[in-house]
Length: 347
Ligand SMILES: [Zn+2]
Image (cartoon, rainbow, N blue to C red; front, side, top):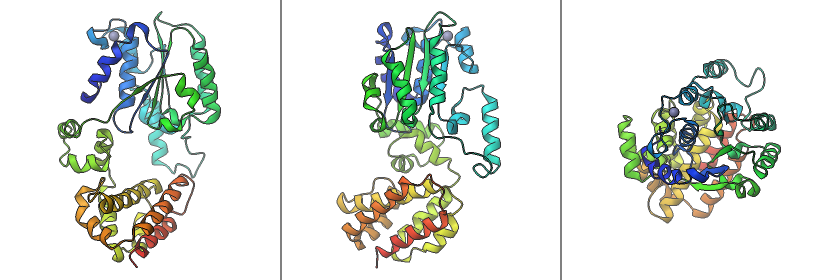
């Protein structure tokens, strides 16, 4: 299935069907459904009785295998850390494995799952592309997200893209094309995917049972799937509590923030903080926030008291923390320091 805002991309891509590029780079903002689109495209390319418009029939052997996650001519390559969420629909082992790890104390015992696509994964792919098709049709590889390729893996992939095996199609998906090797980009046919119009995105979210779609969409930068994830975010109460602390400006209780938020993933809290500071700057320069329109009152009150240069320096501090956020840190100390720094902006 593709999302309603993707039908134009789908139709335009079908025109390439007779001379399909050996590597297609689908890129665009995170949270707009690029991966699902690529998977549906793969299913359509592998389907042995495609319908008009390139839609997979859903009934042939190829379509059934695809849904079960065991089509012999299909591979999806993702970082280990995403495997449980994204793996083929029928891949319950991977999901159970992931659930086990989430249950236990992941990272304390044993190695945390890799967030990179490693060279071993690309090498395994070469074995797959090196043999012929099982079904006599195309072989399709989805690679997601391409920015997760580490340097060695990217170079290994590059060799394949330079001498593409006949009948193999790569669907490369990326939200951060700026992080890809230029040589990889130049070997792919680029296909930019846009963020849907706010009305279309809000309508879709309403269909999913989301009641405050406009506010969530704003927070998610317009990306509907990211907005949906926010709607189901178990940390929403804490998020709102944190925004209230930030809105309190000089009365922000930095130690309470450290204490209350220390159990949350550091990147999550830094993301809230970063978007809040962006909004303070946007409030000053454009007169309206971008991510938290529902907190416009608090943002305006805070922005009026702040020095723009000091705020810009503080944003740099938060951004620097984001660069090391995946390293083991004492979350409580990191949060205390950042929220103290925030309060000092009002001194
Ligand atoms: Zn089919």
